[in-house]
Amino acid sequence: MIVKHSQCSKCKQDLMKGNLLLMEGDQPLCLTCAGFEDLVFLPSGNSTLTRRAKKYSTESAVVVKFSRSRKRYERQGILVQKKALQKAQEE
Ligand SMILES: [Zn+2]
Image 1 (cartoon, rainbow, N blue to C red):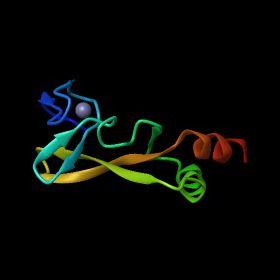
Image 2 (image 1 turned 90 degrees about the vertical axis):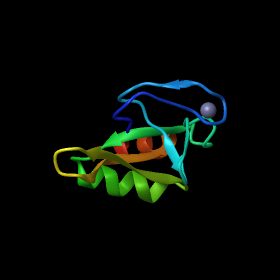
Image 3 (image 1 turned 60 degrees about the vertical axis):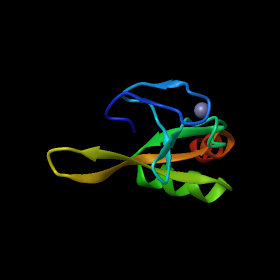
């Protein structure tokens, strides 16, 4: 999760604060260029939903945000496939 304005190293799309990006080495990639465009963000907080969505999703990624005050990355939630999240919510 972006804490300061950035730009995709591939398509040059502007990435604003609060959006998501993938760091590949030191190269920022937008979610489309990273191949994550069909994934949706599921915020932390509901551990049952998170666990189920992860189980049904063939791809998932952990979303972190750098905390300047604590000087470390903190987990914000996960990215899972849309249909996996729907299935988890239906259960
Ligand atoms: Zn891009």
